[in-house]
Image (cartoon, rainbow, N blue to C red; front, side, top):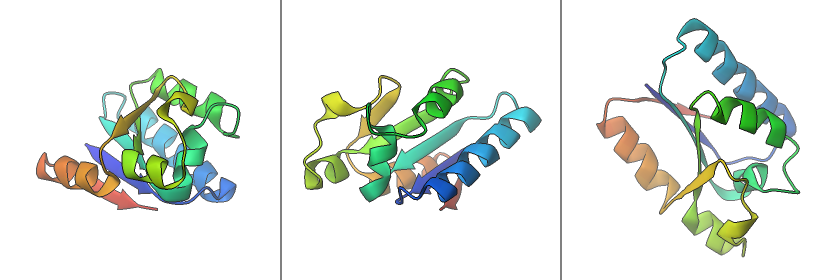
Length: 110
């Protein structure tokens, strides 16, 4: 239903996004939601680094997909093993956004 594209680690922006995703789930509990992490945003998906790890886990338990960009991980020298268990990896953020849009998902860039 919606793919959210983030490329910031700004805690305020992340708070807004997490509230928006929670609100969408309250309105449409079966909504398919992907949050694609690119650039500095991949830090929010890192174990022992993310200030929103608990919030991500709660949303992941409600079937929200958090997907880190492999290109961003490589550029930032972050191994996939540092990601939280509920954060997946896609080859590229842009490729994932395009795929999601082709499948009819709405696109939100933050």
